[in-house]
Length: 152
Figure 1 (cartoon, helix red, strand yellow):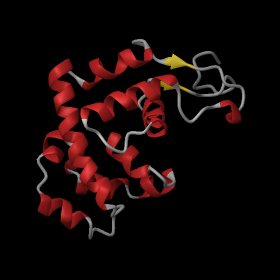
Figure 2 (spheres, rainbow, N blue to C red):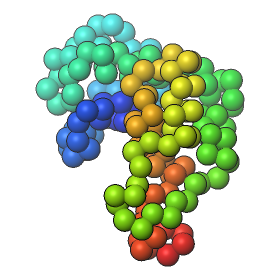
Figure 3 (spheres, rainbow, N blue to C red):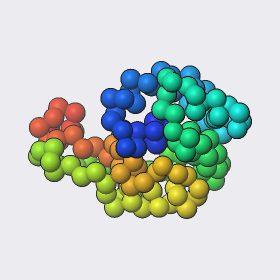
Figure 4 (cartoon, rainbow, N blue to C red):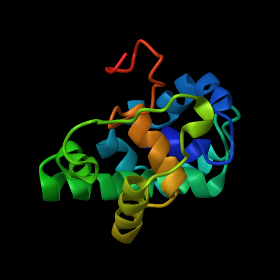
């Protein structure tokens, strides 16, 4: 998920989701062990792969971030054990009434982004991390009128 979030930076989700299958193939089914061990030659080849976003920095970030991800797993026992405390250990359910109320970042995403960058990750700015927190279910921004909001 973090790989796709990083590639989405500056682009629409429609573009990324359309290429999701190719990303999955290019990045070893998103297996962090395998992505972390990708060679420079493999990364260079991906720069020519028309099926994915061919941004050199984003491609390199996938390997770098996988390496950091594995270090975090080792330090905390799992990535979940690391990330959940940033939202207080349980999903944060917001009470937005309309889409214009939904923010693109939060204090939690800013804090997590800062920590991930300090650990060596790239393409993990606070807006990208907010999107990740939403997608991973740590922040629930479904409108109060939405059946997917637990307050509905």
